[in-house]
Length: 89
Image (cartoon, rainbow, N blue to C red):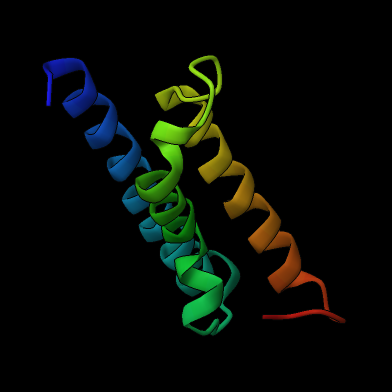
């Protein structure tokens, strides 16, 4: 493993962990709602997807920025799904 790959892996893992913690804090203190494990841990799913598929994607898509962006998008969609009264995870 070279230095660039290590930095990319740490960046994606750190983003997934950070967004997961931010979601937990947002739910508990910002929105005051109790959300189950699935609603809190969805950004970690992006990291697991990254772990198992990132070497199989084209080089243009397999960047840290793409994976971090996908993590943020998944978190935003999760917030919308949890706060929409009819769906709730």
